[in-house]
Image (cartoon, rainbow, N blue to C red; front, top):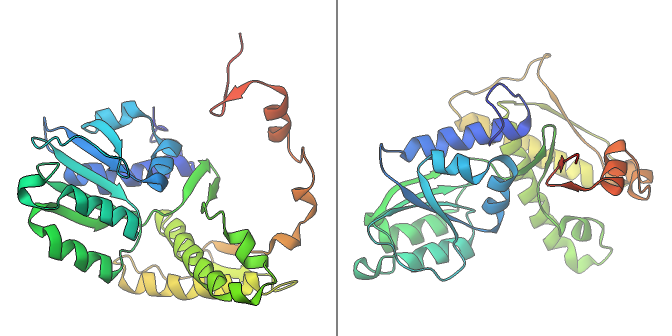
Length: 272
């Protein structure tokens, strides 16, 4: 089951937000839906809930949006996807024409801000088939109650590559990570002060400045408009070089040692 409501960990917070902004938003009594996920949202839901939780929210089948699927025209579909060209193109293939629609109607929920180019593409192709189209601002993976990842495997390469030709790639990665960090803050209802350590490289300072700017823009248009105060949280951004030792120590924590010595699967140890 999903983490209980009384639990205050990050996984529980993320699940409650998804439940409120996605499932409660489109739920109707005695109506079942098919859910379509892409690679990122599959990992996101797997990190904070189980299939039984989705069944409780009226989801009968969960499918990969990238794969070929049989049409189920008598049922509505809930698309929980990232705002990328690949995912949007897969959605559009499901609603190519009214006679060939795979599903009765679509509810679309994007993890993050959807660019105007993609939104207009959807609007021009199949707006009549869409019942909802919203952005929920969750673009990170909660790994543990107090740990999350942005799931950007190319970040290390671009941020530390000495090749000047990778500068544009680095800028794009920084922009994307800043957007994702803002969704973490939004999920936690925080508008933190941003602090950083500038050396040995300028990665931390660049990312901090982007995050600060994007936080300011986000809370300008957000209804809550959280104002920073002395009691507000602090977001600290440091370069990996600040603590290089932990990357070469195999068993830095008791958690790492436990995973090495005990048969732990899916973060669970079963004593026989």
